[in-house]
Length: 510
Ligand SMILES: C[S@@+](CC[C@H](N)C(=O)[O-])C[C@H]1O[C@@H](n2cnc3c(N)ncnc32)[C@H](O)[C@@H]1O
Image 1 (tube, rainbow, N blue to C red):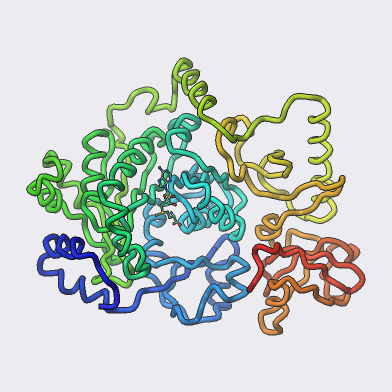
Image 2: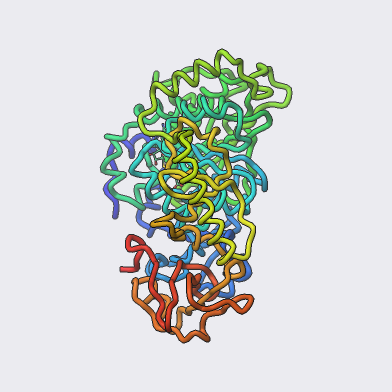
């Protein structure tokens, strides 16, 4: 077998899977599956299918997902740098499909880094509603913020918080919540051999403690009638069926929404709750709860083309016994006061409202004015969100500063730029989320002639003024949106036949 699997894991799977075990084990001898998901925020499916530079095979459970041959290196193509697709393991595409995100939803992705599922949610929101995307690891939120920017998301707030503190700030606020929980990662063994080596260290018992806490708090974050999707990339019943059964026992107002099976999703295994109970490793759940867990789902590596995943869709019952707090999001002023005090005492580095000093306020006003002047001269679009200052930078935020007060904010919204020496400098994320029709100057490069790659490498390009497409008879001199085959890559600054490259050093093609 190509992958060295832990003996304890193999013994458990043999007991759990019985006659299916041999097929399961044989799946480790097949190559892993690679996938890409089209970012419909930046390109329509029709256009992508015409433009796709490699052959694609549909992923059954995700309309925008495709299997690709890993050897083609999908990360080494200008279209990847234009954010036209995300490289994602095919089974990891299923949880967001089950969340059934609609336009205008308020969505929370609680365990989001590096952002695969958040970018999928953002595409479904189509720039409407709100995405709050969070991870407890400050290191991992760097990749999360970068992906939100690369994929052209305009309506996301990126947080680096504990779920408890988000629940204090936003009680019963979100109507869709994704918990892609930290887990023992048994479904990752073929993709990442390190996961197999570290399986004992990320023990199932440790993971269940985190999962229990996160699920518990998610119930306090969910608005009436809302939906939670809980997912793991592990097969362990302690982290899957038993975690869901325990949640349902503690939250009788919730129920599992069984999922359809046509796409290859296998049912949950209530009998595995008995297996745990008989081993003395789990409680005996009431029959009505245990039977519901059959409505959970798994993608198995020996049954579908994917590495494996577990999911449960949880909704609040319509006739459930709810407190006013749960029903209407009402929270008593005393609870609010206690929560605010608690939040303030625990917060080291947080978003602060602008100090009220006149000097500071007029400085901020000037900077916001500089942004408005830039937008008037260079853009032809009404952009969403409130302009706010944060850490010396200007953002368009889907939330007010008050709503974010006291939280550890990585990005309060869409980063549009910063003012240096009285001059507005547009940010790279402004460019990646703009379309060619929204700006005054565009220079379109192509994959074929190699110029797009030269731009991504940071080279200065020569360009005759006639190549700069200028709206309304504008002068070619100034900030130009650089596109590849029509899709935005970043900024350039054109002067006298030369295009100064504004593609950020840390993002360059190497
Ligand atoms: C399976 S990964 C998430 C993958 C991500 N959803 C994606 O699709 O790219 C689990 C994440 O949970 C985060 N995490 C662990 N404990 C957490 C907690 N208590 N609250 C929020 N995030 C947590 C980890 O840092 C990790 O990034």
